[in-house]
Amino acid sequence: MTRNHADRLRDALPAEKAAGAEGAAENPHGSKLSPQALQIASRLQKSVISPIVLAGTVRLADLAIVAAFGFASLNSGGVPLTSSTTLLPVATALILSAAFFQASDCYQIPVMRNIVAQGARITIAWTLVFVTLFMAKTFGNVMRGFESDLLIIWYGFGMATLLTVRLIVSTFVRHWTRDGRLERRAVIVGGGQAAADFIHEIERQPNNDIRICGLFDDRKGDRSPDIVAGYPKLGTVSDLVEFARIARIDMLIVTIPLRAEKRLLEFLKTLWVLPVDIRLSAHTDKLSFRDRASSFIGTVPIVDVVLKPMADWDSIAKRGFDLVVASMLIVLLTPVMLATALAIRLDSKGPVLFRQKRYGFNNEVIDVLKFRSMYHEMADPTAKKVVTRNDPRVTRVGRFIRRSSIDELPQLFNVLRGELSLVGPRPHAVNAHTNEKLWDEVVDGYFARHKVKPGVTGWAQINGWRGEVDTQEKIQKRVEYDVYYIENWSILFDIRILIQTPFALLKTENAY
Image (cartoon, helix red, strand yellow):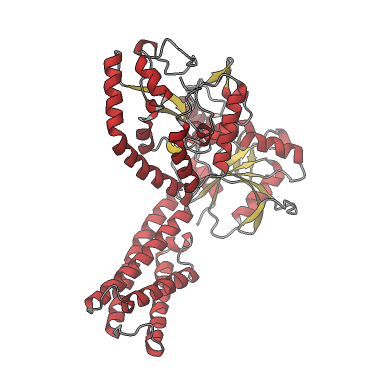
């Protein structure tokens, strides 16, 4: 890149007075963030593109092109596509392509951004693949029955298609780079000289993809000036939690010395609830964390303390699983949902569906769909009053659908909209409380359960923690199970929970 991130950040910020006016206009609910912090956060709301996913997608496209033209070339020569004469050469070409393309660094973002460098590397790697295939044909039995002219056709059409696709990829990558969508957005926790040294070290790294979005520090005065290495201090560490709820941040980098253990633990206790990577800068200290994974940004050592759950391919796998399974469930359960809607309509006046404000991913407030189980005039969309046994607000049909959890079925449409997942921590109402205390006041780290999308069902629910929450222990147990799920997630874990959910619904003692 021709300009560093500090220059671009300074260019992006208008004068202080203008920033204050815009921040005030965007802050009708009394945020504690400064106008400058609000303005920067609002500009970071567009989601980023994972370089790992992008590189993997391009890799799959390359291999698909190799296989497609291999089979097409053989088919044009009249060779059966299912014979070993076809499968063995194509499999060999796939293995060689994967190896040579990787060795040529064809999947590095800086290379994909440069049309000339990308084209040259693809040409060399693809040529090496066919040099190897010709040698195998000449000196071995791998290419037996595969005529040389078919190899030439495969090479020519494959090369043209690979270069065309890479030209398109390069166009998109350059556009995404200019738009700031291929960067890892980082916030520095801490200030002063330690932060300045870290920033200078990062900016010296070649092909650096870290975009520093600002600093947050509890200290004031000379120990933590308002501008550090060209970047503004945007607030305190507690302000950072609100900032990260608005902005799409990838990582928090803590630059205080590792020996400041007490201060470090206080920071981590505040920040671990956020759905981001948390890393400790160790460029001025010796790494001594045996149980932590150490890594590098360029040559700068860091310690990985908290990793963002379900990142990169994991998030794509979970989303794909949700879409496929939710669609199937909607088709299978349509008769049940239609019968429920009819029963609600016949039982009491009012709409069939009920919308309730609940916490979603990263504390975003979403409208969760349910079948209406209360009398319309007594509905409680903000959950100010907990539903209790024999609650007079609940209709006759409502009692049945609540005990059986049929009232939750419309949330499958929330899954299709991307607001919920099939499996995850259950979304709680924004005013959910026990003994007049909001649940985030009852449980330390309560909002850590919002590091992933909430789910229609969850690990806590199949372990018996569903229904009324009338004691502090019940919400503590829910959070405990939710955090365990987040830290141990896998597709197989989701499948296990889905299979166990119908059996868990048979236990209805706490559901009313």
